[in-house]
Length: 173
Image (cartoon, rainbow, N blue to C red):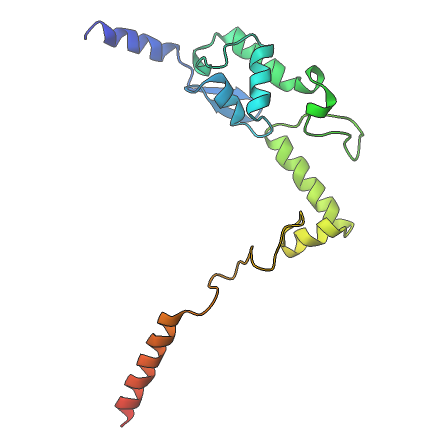
């Protein structure tokens, strides 16, 4: 048992708990594929492609990889748009520049917010739905998506109110 403890301590010393890509901290205790897929803009398929491109076992623990291998993965993530076909990128023919890019991390959230604000400003149908806080993509709204809380009649409240009124009438008599 005492022989196993130094091995575990040595493994913990080699483990990098956080791996930083861009402005995102990834969990180094998880596998390469799983920790990459936690990043905004990278799903399971994209994470698998990145691991294959970097020649890394996708089930290996991300924090136990060598620094040069981690740097290789970071470079592939940052230059992902140039390594895959256009249909695999998440930002095809940008409205302003016309370029095809793959946004990740906070850039994806900012780009999405700019798109929503542009739709609101030009008063497109989707923009007005966003303004009102209603569903945008054609879902049904007759019976779902209600945000008011209670739907229907709350019988318990009515009984409590009647009991209070009855108690108030008895006090008046």
